[in-house]
Structure formats: structure tokens, C-alpha cells
Length: 103
Image (tube, rainbow, N blue to C red; front, side, top):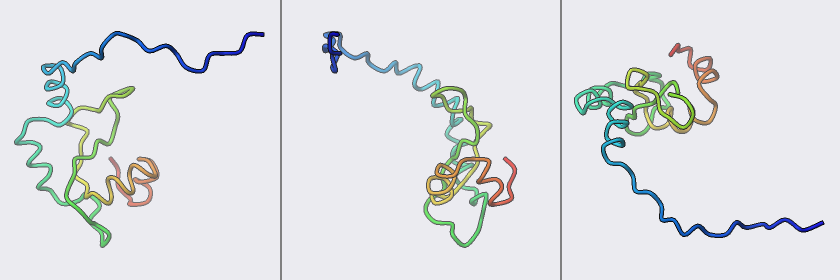
């Protein structure tokens, strides 16, 4: 039996550059216009307890499908602690149960 090759040969095709128009359209869809982003970031943390820490962040509470963020209507304001350290670590269902919130 012939041993498997572990590494694939390198491709000579250069990486594609990011399509700037499509990137801008996806960013607008996912986060909304600048005025909406500023408004969401001006809101207090949705959880508001003694552990709140860090700047406000726009937290997507749903996905838009595989490797895609949901649109701007699925965004809530969370502090850095609740967004990164809690929501991303334990997941949305456990987060909602732990803090008695319904997204």
C-alpha cells in the first residue's frame, strides 16, 4: 500500500483580493448605517449588572447562515464582558437562561 502524501503541493494561483463593494455592502447589512451603530453603542448593556465591564459592543444574537453575520436588526448592545467573555463562551440559550433575557 502506498503511503499517503501529507502535504498538498503549493498552488501557483495568487489569492483573490477582497471585493471592496461587496465588503462594504455586507458591513452595512450586518451593522447598519453609522447613525444606527452610534445609537446602539450609546445604549447601556442589555444585562446591566455589577459585572459589566468594558466598552459597549454590537452583539449579533443570531447567525445569518454559515460563516455569515445576521443583519442589523439582530444586534443588541452588550458590554465587552457579557459579549466576549460570557455570550461567546456559553452560547445564546445558556446566556438567556442565566440572565433571564429573551433575545
